[in-house]
Length: 370
Length: 98
Image (cartoon, rainbow over all chains, first blue to last red; front, side, top):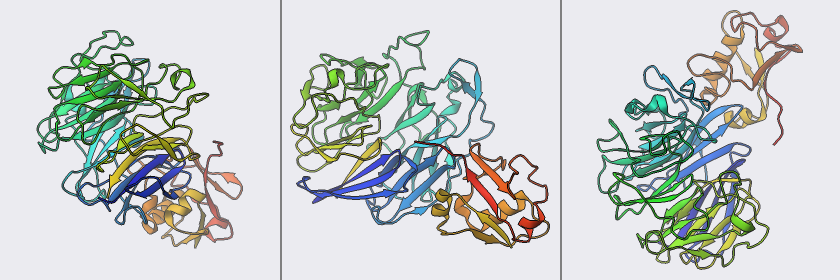
């Protein structure tokens, strides 16, 4: 591998950042889809030139874009997301029934083996799949049919399915997460699902250890060990070693365990990154210091990474889809902020620099190692 | 020919630089003009009105001859001056900052 391509979704368009393996000299392309919200872009592992992008607007709704040349040119594809059968209701913010209504695509997850197959996590929470390169979409209704769907409630950002993890060792297993319902797993390719929230404890809901209702912000997996998952919950950093059957807290010595983003080092399955945020009512770093925290022990023991990051007067946020790692020999770690910076560390977090300073608020960051 | 003026974001999406002209079979209505628009530019399906119900998106309005026709029946005839092409049908996105 000789370089990287960073796919950045922002409030006002998409940007593609490219560099060679040194990752110190960057070319910036964009804005693509200027003026639209780009919640997420992601490339196909089976064909890195195939990239899918979620483009949306409060005025004009959802558009899905597809590139066959690594993001140089794009074509709009299918944007019709129709819930299967009678959609029914989930709960509104005040606990009253609210009909399921499609709003936007939060996350696109291309298949590990087929560039034409891609999953979409949407708001109001549901999982869709396309097998024709995103031309047509069909819901996998077993998730909303889990039985708890009528009890799901939105987080402040909406009732969004924001995380999709495909198990490299088992094509029929995948994990998803919904704010504020929790985490779910299928072992049969999406036909049936089970809630995997045992061990989570959330003080903001009537029953703190309920089966569903937890505001899971993000889940991360190392591909070599797909039964070990790390979670940034609303509050608490969590870990499971049994594919979600049980979770335990690994927040350890973090200065605050609220946050959104979490990811795992590409070559060290026990090395985990989070960006602690002060609290659920103050969405910025503690003490105005932007610090990534790294655990080399799979949680519990965390060290602050600050070299190259602003250590005073910094009040940005790092959103749940805005952290990623590359797979070069020296693992690169990336994150974007609501202040429009995209930071890179080419050495696993020891030193950081800003690739760009002044983009629109960053919603998502993904990396392709080329 | 019916002339339709699209908002900037939809012109970009449809890859048109200016207003578009559409042939509409029979008496022109809002519904038949939007049908013709979406047939010519399928990428606009779902961006102005719902794919299935055809309900107008909340922040989209339709203006004709200095009148807001957003709440008229989609099957109501459009004004003669729009039908003959003297005036355009305007598809408008609500003004907003940010």
